Image (cartoon, rainbow, N blue to C red; front, side, top):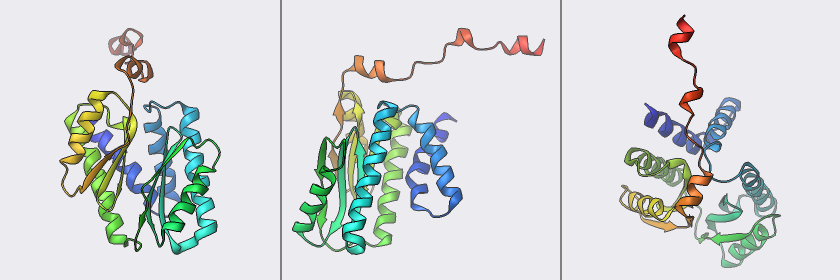
Length: 216
């Protein structure tokens, strides 16, 4: 039951932003809020990452319009750039633009100099992302919320704050998922002790209400 719920939340966070209209936006917000509670980043860092993505997108859209297809994924103030642009010069321009956004501490420029991908190709990438996330949950080797998955042209990028054991499991599961062309490991390694410090503690059962007492 818990696995099914987590898969639904993870897939929802991937698919809903692609949709249009008021309800999907609200639903996506609720899904993101639930997952955010389990994120190893602080709330402040999560907020900064969201702001970095928004500002990067706004600046690029203003300058390049529909000449490019770009995705901005900020994790722990480091930005992954994926998508397609028509020239190497424009690729460098995008990187410089994003580097200048406040609070950005690093940029992974994985933009391809190529024709813009089709909607069908982007839908396939979204499907791959959902498959990888689903396998993370099914395997049960780590909390799937701790690894962010981004797919572009069949290449899967992994971001997150994880232990060495969690990173190895995530890379292996992504690499062996159907349709994945390659895996790019951008995971930040933390110690087991640091992971325990950042993770939410389990509920204190001693403080839970007694169902029998409630029935009288």
